[in-house]
Length: 173
Image (cartoon, rainbow, N blue to C red; front, side):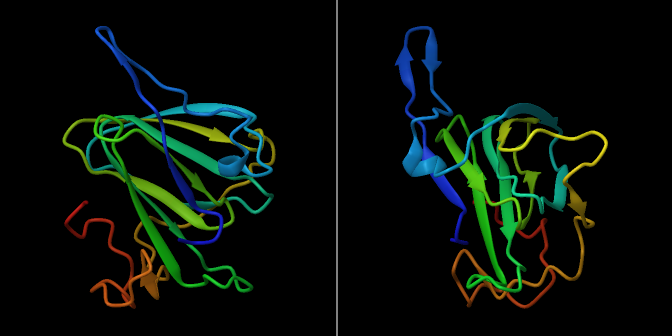
């Protein structure tokens, strides 16, 4: 994976009523590193919606958990000084099947697509408060032809390598 991108499983505590799970704990230092979450957001997106690409250049990292539906989260590294430059990571989050939290390095281009037939609900924490007057967001179109991965999930033989990234390329695993 791109240095700084991580995924961790969350323990579901099941009983006859359903389940409870901790999504974030400040003492998860092996996962959070030096990050401290300062804001928690909720996003609701309809099937097929693509929310991409954007990045944060002032040190913000994002933590995504999909609690309903399923999403494909992608991070693309085009930082000139990065040893993982040109790499693209795809992470499918589906809280019903396997509850996970993905840490996305904010300085990499990132976004997600809803790949389930029902809407997706995303809880996401951030390490910097959103500044309404000076937002730390740089944006590109979701279908930007300049997102040209050299590898996808570490694989150079993926058919999509060297081509503009296609959010709609099946399958969504």
